[in-house]
Length: 185
Length: 325
Image (tube, rainbow over all chains, first blue to last red; front, side, top):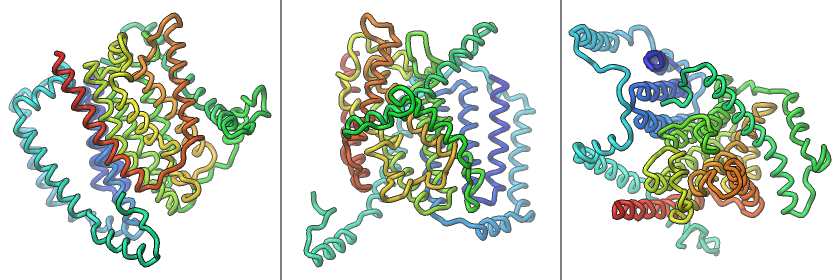
């Protein structure tokens, strides 16, 4: 299990690095999917199979599909790849690189301080315990997240409504003198 | 945790043998299905179907295989080569991986995963990429349209598929498919969970985009949809992948709603094969008997009819389980 953990972790880091450096947007997204899948394996090796499954179903299998869906329609070509490459000039790396170095230094200091970060072989955390924790101690946070999602849903439904389209379609259908096919059912 | 993490070499060899046997059986039955479907469609459409090669035309599969292997494997120069090549492999990989957690009998099966159902949902949600990437990398407008339809259709129907399974999980109290089969010893899940069964079957049909949900490859509108540019064995992988999907959904329906290997007198495997076979034939009948809906009808049907029914089903099942405990 420990070996699998390190292997998956290396794949995750390498894939994430490629997400940043890849000039082709769809290829970058595929690397991001790889990264999410390897993080799922990391979860599994840490004894959280439920979290691993949800990582694949929700992130790799649903959210990333929508990302790919949108990027697919952007009509990417050689020009956009070239432009993306020009944005990845070496001078761009300095700022983020420095910030990342600070984080790595903090992490290294914490690890060197002998803080126990937990071992790789722990007891499996099954769905029941996840559920009990989420709807027990963290029920308020879960409810708040539900509110936010509901608000987003309402906004999306509002923005996506097609009253005007419907009126327009009805007018056209009336002009043609036949019943509008997608009207009131 | 892994069923394969055994300590003796003999066990490893046996497990490897079992795995390969299941893999071969599944792939061969999927390939044979191509012939079965064409013959059955023939019966229902009052014609013969392929009956020339071998007894009853059963060697038609071999002839098709030889043809498909020796065809020119052409990659369009305008395609995104790497993605174009990977796409057909994804559907084969994810579907075959999903078979790993299916318990065929009391003892036969590759892995007993305690997140069995979630594993299958994960694999089926990754299968979407095969179609989307195939459509995108082909750089062809029909392929791209097919891919866009797929993305919306599969993401939507995945929701109902997952939700319809919750009732079964609640009754069994486990994600493990073996536990779910054993929980049906008294009564098959299809009786208390009938709406879930119907919705799972419809959603499963949409997941593997079979007729009447084959909008991603609607041949009258999109030539061949997402696999327009594919030829040779790459097309063959999409083709066999679709039949693997049929076998997978039939096996899942058997396991989740019809008691898997459970049944009197006959051995477990025979029961499993009979039940799964029934649903496979039903898939073919569905193709022969139904028409393809319009795209907006497909979406409206999913979100306005299937979603409320699944939610009510989950709520009622949950209430009953809580009341009984």
